[in-house]
Image (cartoon, rainbow, N blue to C red; front, top):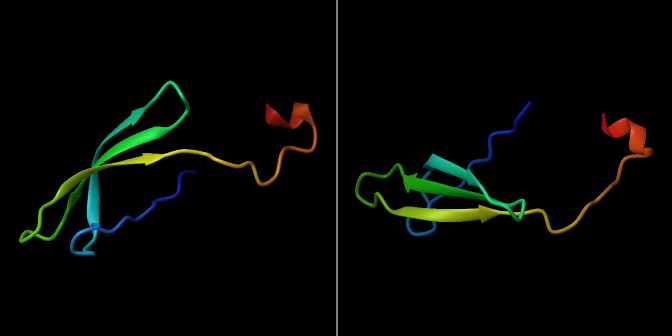
Length: 64
């Protein structure tokens, strides 16, 4: 089950909506996001990446 991650507009701090998502070859995810505040309506791109594994599986067989 996925988790909804809310990101606020970096300009006006209002809530924003994700319009497009691309998974990149390096394992990261790029998203195009638009501010919901009609007076702002900024569109921007974010990049989500894993930079550290906090806990690995106990055994390799638990991956499947």
